[in-house]
Amino acid sequence: MRAALTPMLCLLAVLPACNPHVRRDPDQSQVAVPQAFGAQPEGPRVAAPDRWWEAFGDAGLDALADRLFADNLDLKQSWARLAQARAMATQAGSARWPTLDLSASVGRGRSYDFLGNANDTNQYGLSAMASYEVDLWGKVEARAQAADADVVAARFDVEATAMSLSGELVSAWYGLAEQQAQLALLQGQLETNETLLELVRLRFAQGLASAVDVLQQQGQVRRIQTQRPLIEARQAVLANRLASLMGLTPGGLAYAPPTTLPVLPAAPATGLPGELLRRRPDVQAARARAMAADHRIAVALADRFPALRLTASTGFQSIDLADLVDRWIWNVVANLTGPIIDGGRRAAVVEAERAGLRVQLAGLGKSILRAIVEVEDALVQEARQAEHLQALDAQLDDARSLLEQSQARYLEGLTDYVPVLTALQGLQTTEQSRVTAHAQQVTFRIQLYRALGGDWPHALKEAP
Image 1 (cartoon, rainbow, N blue to C red):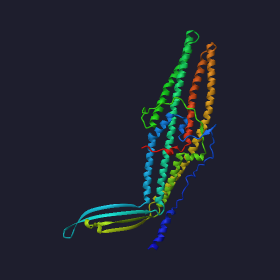
Image 2: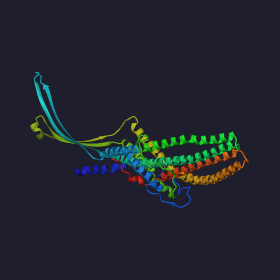
Image 3: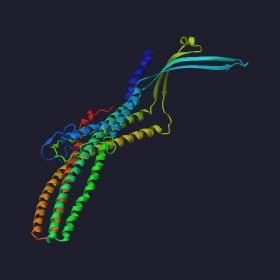
Image 4: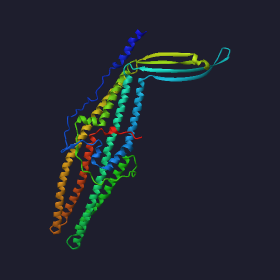
């Protein structure tokens, strides 16, 4: 008997390696990763802190970030999906082990003989049944590995969500700072325009200016005043965004808004594109999904081959409860089933899973491209924005000089008020553009920090 079983046991040990599926390496995507980034920031570069927003040195922002990771609903949703994936992985992995069920039964029946006499009988049973699917072709293991890869992807999704939310938070925070800076600038411009309006009115009273001059300067005051409601509206929208990021309704978040835009810290070191892909959780999530899709091809292929299921049961059965343990029964069954005709269903499943792998590999390639492009875009935009700010500073100097000269000529009676008004409008428009450009430079830096990824989301823990 042992000699007869030995070849079968050897066959069962070898069969799981006979799955005809050839594994694909998700790292061999269709995207060629460059050796280095094309754009590089000028000046010294430093390693960004693990929690990149701390580079701005803003305690209020740091406190909001901690609250974000505890209360944000998108993040809670991602944690729940991770818990769901873990449960599904446990379910898939349980097929590696036999199942054991215990059952107890009691029944009563009545039968009649030819003469119509009734005969009542009782039936008692107590049994245990074990079943196990022999993983002949690696189907069970491949299904469990696919579920494990789904868990990995879900964890990286949590980290990608946290990374994206950190960028949204910092952008909204310094968006508020921009609006505060614009309000302060607007207040100063309004005071300047009102002072000039009083001057023009005084000259008009002295017969040195016309009513047109007064109306023109009064129109400039009105133009400045009309901008305030728009800035306040943007402030309210950004405040609502901050509240929603914390899982609160509008007005539910108490915070001290920033009053000034930050001076940018030293540019972060970008590293190499290959290192970037490791630091990007969205890329890692896409890679894990490609691996899961690859394992599911193996499951679909193995499903086209015969399946061997072993079942064993033992227990007690009697018509008398007192004699139950005296009537022991057992049963062992080996069931081998295989498909013959299924209308092409299993072949279609294989093709669908192979197409699913191609979908995931293309998605992985898109994630890699997006990661590289986001870094390149942020680098070149920040560099060009710095040049734009330098040009705006020079333009501001020229505009201030022009306004001084125009005012001097107007007060000397050499020109009318139009050159003064034109110079004033040009200066104040450029001042507002300077604040906007500074805020945009901060935004590009935020985009660079976020695009560079990082390991800090690994430390995140699900809120109780």
